[in-house]
Image 1 (cartoon, one colour):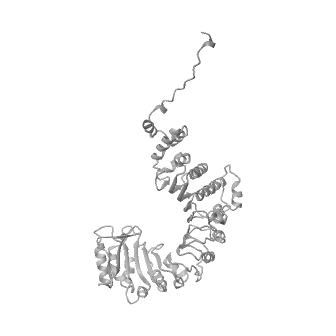
Image 2 (spheres, rainbow, N blue to C red; image 1 turned 120 degrees about the vertical axis):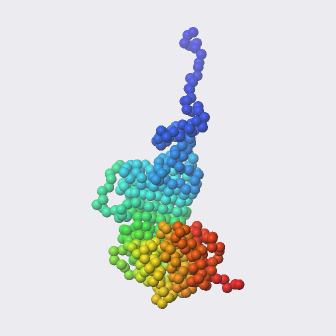
Image 3 (tube, one colour; image 1 turned 45 degrees about the vertical axis):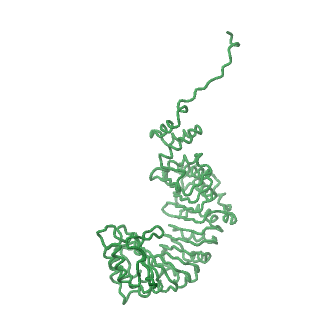
Length: 491
């Protein structure tokens, strides 16, 4: 037969052996621990079928579930290794994520890897339709390209409807001196141009869904971004933590106005009182202030009266009531005061706590006083020293409710609990006492029990009575409590 007379035959292709297997067998193969994360990522990019199966194996290995209410990517369980898979996942398209936290500090030894992870996370956020809560841990390698990637990432997050944004920068200081070396890597020139223009004009900021922003350390490269993000926004909850570059913070915050701000937290910072007073004056809407450990080299005068006219809840340290804040009787709507007792001391400071209680006695409103005992040393001596003759507790006519909690691991000592009822009896106008279960001894052998505590309180404070069976607890805000209320006058 001549070549021209040969019949036409279509070329045939044999399917690869693995693609001819059932899904169940492929899943079993992809679960093999000999396949690295990079191997699964490469397989996922070969075809749509393998994409879903390989990424499912990758996410299962690192316990990442796109259907979960909270996605956590950390180095603790190596779930951060699933991040490149999330970046390419087709299953993430148009998905709504309730909450995600990501630690972008795990590759601190490789700046280029940090850049890749930041870009991968942005790519993941670009795929989803919405996210509610985002928490990021960052470590600045002092690379302009990384800084640009972070701002691109934050841009994408807030534009996806994020309502709560937590940005924690882990570095030795929030002030970057000019003498610090910068790592030299190829980088884009776009960052300065981005920071020169207004990222979020006021009318745009008002359209964002962001309601809570918590900032830990405030590096220079993020100051212009946050200034534009916060100014004119609808944020109600703002927090600053570990911000020691006080002069920079004062410049940063000077022209920021948030018309809906109600909750403000300042913890372990070094913020000038003049800048704080100006910020308080600009935000008269604040109703909740958590003000703790604002460390300054020289103790400044107390903040002037007339600030925060709508404040109703104050969380602060005992010494701040005396030295930093205006007289409490200037806060016309103040009803709740939260004090940690013993924090930063080697022994419970009886004199300092007494002066704080004297400040509280000036209040004209009915006050709920919450005391969190964080130090056991000196507690028994403090309670034992209290007497009706010279204790400031007897002047606290404004305190109508008292709530006790502790962070001491084993609860309060048996001696402290035995002295507690007679100390409560010093308060002349208590209507309600609440004691968290954490205050009770962890060991049943370290009496008194809950029943014995209630019995002793009733004996020393006859105007109070239990409102529930002694064997049960109330759960307020998820915390088990014993509650004792004023006796009803109705027989």
